[in-house]
Image (cartoon, rainbow, N blue to C red):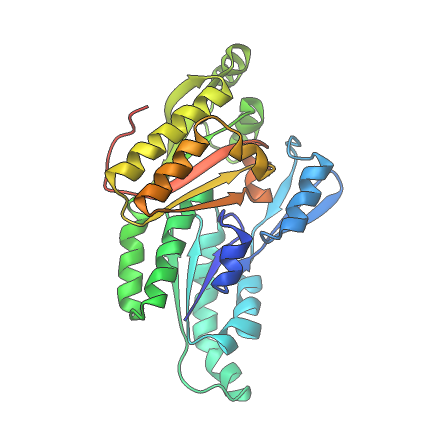
Length: 311
């Protein structure tokens, strides 16, 4: 039984390797350069070194229906008997729809592929919308690894992942409001207005954005990025101490992770997770994520009972 994710899911490379998680890549084109966003650290480092995150004219090409079919029929159906494919929320990207469409052809054609290779038995594929983005995709993936390790049956896993998707919260603190507004407007999203971008930049006011059940929008504002990070991490500490539905806190940063560790309040979050037995997964933000929300942004994701943010 295995897992597949899209490249926008912010999880550490070591975690992906440990659990043999396949990554569906996104192609990013900007300023004459092409990047294969597949969570490879070398490619992320190349992107950061070229300092292209501020380029607003980037084009992203998510994994197509045909790409997904090839990935499964050439590899995954021969290695696994069941694969759960977890994607970024369908409200923000066509990836989920592409994977869903590809699954019909995969389930129709896998038998011949497996028979030719001498692999017996049926193959199952289940597509799960995490209803979240970036670090917010992580808790469902983490829970899937725990359930697989525990030997749970596919129907049990599928039902549980749906519950976790509906109780996962992701928060983001951006650095560059102009960049964020430019990219969101390109997608037809008006959640960051020009007025907010101009005033926010002039006064160093940053919005705290939340994604919950596929819906994104501001839930607070702070003066200064470092103060905002401190508030966000303090909120995460309170949620850890209140109890999480999945014992993991996922954090991603649009840059060198050493910079994340130096942000105010982060050490307190690390300590709170350790005391509560919660795994803290730190990952670089995907190239796709940095192109869309700007370099230097922080996102965090966790699953908890329904609540209102108390910033």
